[in-house]
Image (cartoon, rainbow, N blue to C red):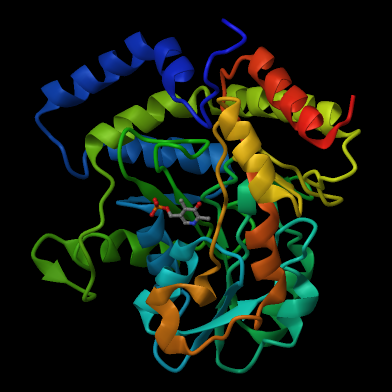
Length: 373
Ligand SMILES: *Cc1c(COP(=O)(O)O)cnc(C)c1O
């Protein structure tokens, strides 16, 4: 490794190299089975993922977005109902609500954790609220107890977006097992990623599981008899086979992420101009992304680019200012915390198998930019 190597933001190369033989064997078995939709691999993966996540049921679907919208539909979201979502969420969270026809009710996050602030949610609950969607952003679990209390009091559902946080815990419980209905994504770059698109709902509720299982498959429980006007959103056999292989390694890969994150935290602690990720009491973080905040974000980013260090911004424009949601009539300045996070957040390179020497070079470059020796 030369000291001038380009440092990519993310790479699957190290973990894919590590499991290559195992993966190709699983894909070969899938290929040779001649059965590609809703077969034994999906069943096996759903059982394994449910067990790993500490829930009764996991239902594989075609994407995280579909998992969210089907979970919301099961929660009763639709025209005339409301869903509370973070104002700084990924666009999929808002699109999932829009897909049900329910009204999007944005709640400002805690500016330190980037996660939903229960105090902001309280005032937004109405008799029309169908669900509140905590998004465990960047891999850190949301503080769930106050949300669960609100749900109990008002009679709505908690739908966790666990796309970025597979393996994180709140109060000892795994995210994706705490809400009534939960969604996750297996987009290739997630902590548990497929070799294409995929997602899953997780729940302990038998009725909701049955609904989702039918809804993803044209609303059918028995072939050619349709109970719901559903969709085609199925996890396929080859993706399930790939996910089964990767699930066996997920905890270890999450530990590698944590080790690299700690190296960043130690190395950047002495830089007063940046705010480091802050993990709330009772919560854990699985470091899907390592996101710092600084008002010098754009200049720092340019400086790092010049040094061959690739960074990203999650996310540069909050959903309420996206053209796609212009018709909702939200204004600039309406969600100042989300807007400020969009202007100051910077995601540093982090992936399992990333060389520690690369973390050190990123740290050195940031310290150099700020003149910290
Ligand atoms: C990736 C992601 C999704 C959507 O997942 P897809 O599989 O890409 O549809 C939803 N929410 C969050 C927070 C995500 O990071």
